[in-house]
Every structure is written in structure tokens, then in C-alpha cells.
Image (cartoon, rainbow, N blue to C red):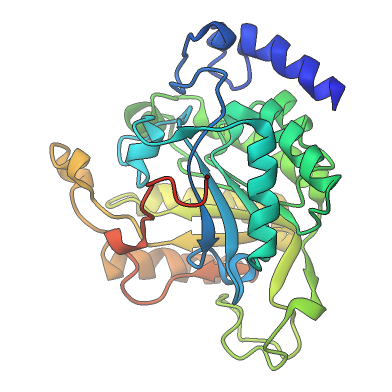
Length: 329
């Protein structure tokens, strides 16, 4: 605990937690690209049913949405928290209590959403909660613009990594996320995540549907007896953007050639054009069924088996949580 306390103080006075390396003194109230001081800030903590089936299960994933973001994609689906407009300050002990509360509510796991700029404080809260009975898997849910050195702080504390791989093209990542080096940074970060947790592991006793009928929304036919909930491993998410099927195919090929079936890949069609992108014509529409099908067929053709896809109409603002402080107090 003391080690994390000391490291937190050191990093918060000269912040290099992420690849932006802003070097601001967050303890003195300064903010860098993420928009956050050293005050731990979150916008919602609740059971969440809209993650991948092996994360949400039947009881829900215990998600904690942190305020701020070091990527701030132009099209961000969680815009109000990414830009830091929503959220409440909490202590590390309160965060630990939130973790325990989510476990008591029946959460299959504790899901840390966009916590990269608060990693030292999160580590303190996790150790505090684990010492008091927190024993569900810890999921780290990230946009993947992460420093390997920061991720190493989570080694042994996180069980499941849920990273995005948003772009292959540096032109796209520079245009929409002001991070031309996104692919290089994100793939190195995902490599560190895989080093930490390795191959996917599922827990049979958590499975409430032993016949596995409809439990695993993957691209292969359901296999009898496959457990439902992941307790260790990596699921890389890729959100299709309108008009960018070629970029998506390059990402899928990279992931499959690099990791094969040692990771899961979640191919998402839920991109929702929100009011803050109305001035960007190419982003101001949903992904078409034809675009999504083209990418899905490509995934099957190159041999991706451990994957998740979304059926029907997934693009909707109703899937975006209300960041109203639920579960924080």
C-alpha cells in the first residue's frame, strides 16, 4: 500500500502516466490532456448489462465510470465524462467501498472504465478492497492509449483486460483522436496486457446455462458446456466507424496474425452519431448493415473464431448510461 501511496504522490506532481506525458502537477490542481487533477473523480458505479456476454453474464458487470480521458475521440460515445463535465470527487477508500458494494449487489466482476489517468489511486483502492474481501475478477476497460510502465502497476491486480483498438491508420487517429501514434502505442499496450493475463480462462461454476444456448454471442457455433464468464484474459474491442471498413479489416488481420485464438475480438456496430459530431458529415451517420456484414465476413474468412459480434440494431443512445452519480455515495 505504501508503495502505491508514494508512487501516486510522485506521479501526480509530474504526470507521465499516459503517452501524452503532460508533466503537469496534478496535486497542485493543474490538469493535462485528460482534464483531471489528482482528485479521484467518477461519474457512475452500477451493474451494467451491455458489455460482452462473458463480462456482463446474467447479473451484470460492476462498472465504475471514471471522469476524464486521455484520448477524447471526436466521436466519443461517453462524451460528457470524457471531457470531464460529469463526475464527483471521491476518496480512494470510498472507491474501495464502491468495489465491495458492487460485489455485494451480485456483480460478476468490477469493471474499471477509462481509469488510466487514475491508476495509482485505483491500485490503492483495489488493495484496500481486496484486503476486505473483494474477490471477483477485476476488468480494466480502456481506449488503449496507455503507457506500458503504467500498465505494469496493474500486474497482479487486474484479471481481464478489455482494450479498444480503434484505428490502424495514423491519419484517422490523428484526425479523430489527436494521436497519430495511436496504433503503435495501443498495440504495445495490448501486448503488455496479454503478457500479464495470458490465455482466456472461464469459470464453469458461474455458468447458469450449461447447455450454452445463446450464452456466448460469438462467431462460431455455440459449443455445449463452454462456460459463460471470463475470469482471465483479453478481449480486444473494435468499434466500426462509418466508411472505414478497410481500416477495420487491417485491425482484424493484425490481431488475428499476432494473437490467433489466444485473445477474443469484439467487433462492434454500435457507433452512434451524437450531437457533437453533426458538423462532421462522415461521422454523422450510423454504420450500415452492409458495412458491418462486409467486416464480419472478412473476419470469418481469415479464420477468427474467438470473437463477439452484435446482432440487429445496436446503435442507440439508449445503450449509453446516465452519468448522474449513481452508486457513488
